[in-house]
Image (cartoon, rainbow, N blue to C red; front, side, top):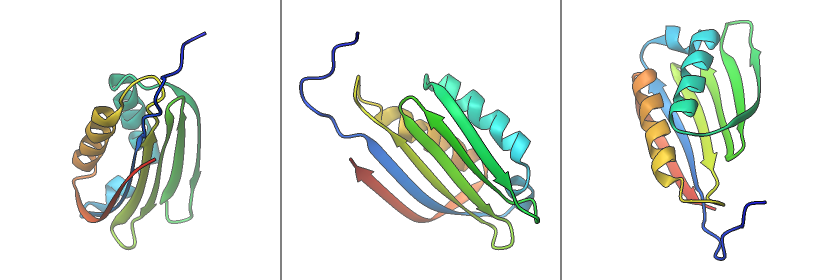
Length: 122
């Protein structure tokens, strides 16, 4: 059994609304999932589940459940936007750098500009 930290460390929760000029990136769920899973593995997170829904216009909702918490996105190709929700808890160590790296890499993948950004320590 792993010993928990003696002092609670808040994790970083990032909530973004992004402008994506290439709507094709917002309707290709298999390509996104492949990229996201490789990225999460590269960042040493552990995927414990995933689910998704593809809508009539091929937009999608994706939830990847991590041992450390979650990565969820919702795409809106008709508005050239997506929302992103990423939280990594800090129970066994500080995951702040991982959150920042994952966020940065997803911004690059989607060729996105930030419309709204909220960073919450929780």
